[in-house]
Length: 196
Ligand SMILES: Nc1ncnc2c1ncn2[C@@H]1O[C@H](COP(=O)(O)OP(=O)(O)OP(=O)(O)O)[C@@H](O)[C@H]1O
Ligand SMILES: [Mg+2]
Image (cartoon, rainbow, N blue to C red; front, side, top):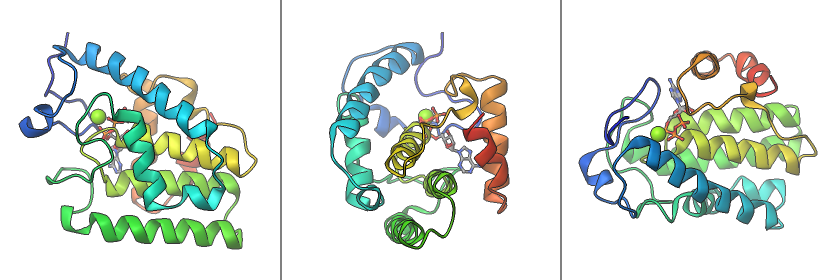
């Protein structure tokens, strides 16, 4: 059993004020994970039902709305930018501009076929988690963003190591290794991991 507020490797801990904004009353991380999982399913349903084009997905409005739909039954701050500094992510005052610039880049890559569809989606994923725009849920949200964009570009859903990445284990370690390689400018490991 893990009480709320503790953290594991590559996971941003929640600050007391963020915990105070939890909507349901839950005692453990396991209960929270399960609650979030169900909320995320609703977000996924909303996203797959909506008729969005690839370029629509690469907009700050859409990406934030998706976070809202994934976490609106769970956190009062769903879809809102982070307000506190973390060990992962850009400084709070840079979030908005970096996020808008990223969406512009992704739209450009789509319109100019700068990279393969998979690579566009995976680069979008990595830059999103690197910015870390939200207090929590960044990994799960950015994986769904990549999945949605890949399918809109005619590709199958990513497999992300074919394992539950929320749990600590080999797959999560490999995922974080690939994320760190991408931090250092090498996207290939993450590209391979997403289809493994
Ligand atoms: N060094 C790093 N550089 C960029 N992104 C990172 C790094 N380490 C971790 N991340 C990303 O941050 C995510 C964790 O952030 P957060 O806790 O907000 O997301 P989550 O969805 O709650 O967690 P998880 O993805 O673990 O389920 C990881 O999934 C990963 O995508
Ligand atoms: Mg988290």
